[in-house]
Image (cartoon, rainbow, N blue to C red; front, side, top):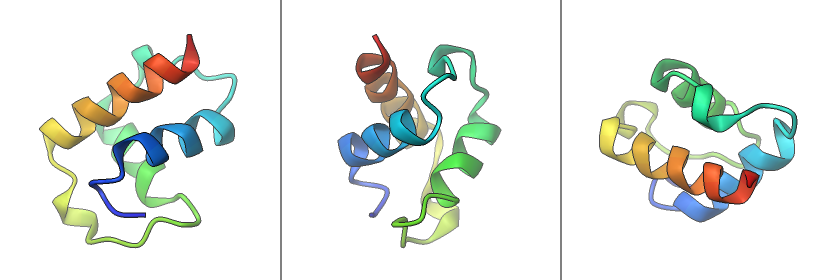
Length: 64
């Protein structure tokens, strides 16, 4: 997975952290959750605020 795989990342986060409300997660924690995903294989420094916002929103959409 790469940072551009927003939906795939959101789905993986939803599965791994199924009891966690994504609306309450800080970006620092979200970044750490993404880079710790087993299939994540991208430059850890490329996950900026806009990408994290998109991932968080996609995760929220999966969560509800």
